[in-house]
Length: 237
Image (cartoon, rainbow, N blue to C red):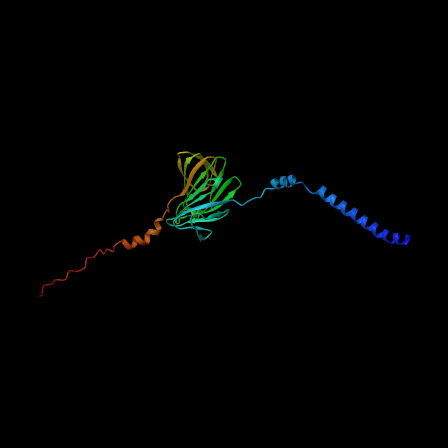
């Protein structure tokens, strides 16, 4: 009888030890797992960064990143928007304001933090509406962007609301254009504005060099001969 008890005592002891270990493990896991409120707090503390986007309103031919775009299209950060002849584009930036571009204008749009940056790839006309507390920058990239035949970087800055600062000339100079003012700058490089502002950056029309018209003018100049041709008499001798 004693030998039978001894034979089942060892397995029972082993099962008891295993049960205690499993119970201890579940107890530890329960204590270490965060409460539901802790999980909610962690989830709320995580900030998911979403890339900024804008919405396009297109009238006439407008391309976004080389593809013809329609009203309602989503414009991603870093996109290139181009308005062709007869085309006009309005880009709604939400809390960052609005950008309008007119025909023969190409821009690269960047929404950075609490500001908007416009690179004027092909200079036509761009208008920025900037809400209070938002910064804006318009960069003129190359000399040849202003006019097809001239290397003069002539820019008109027209401020309707707020004020804009223009950098121009070499070495760089700065001038503030106030609301209601319309000023012209040569060799302008960038225009900035912060706060409640509405302003337009426009390139002058092309300046055609006189040399271009010389060949055409030569075709229009009649060829004169000092010697008059002889008059042939119709009378018979």
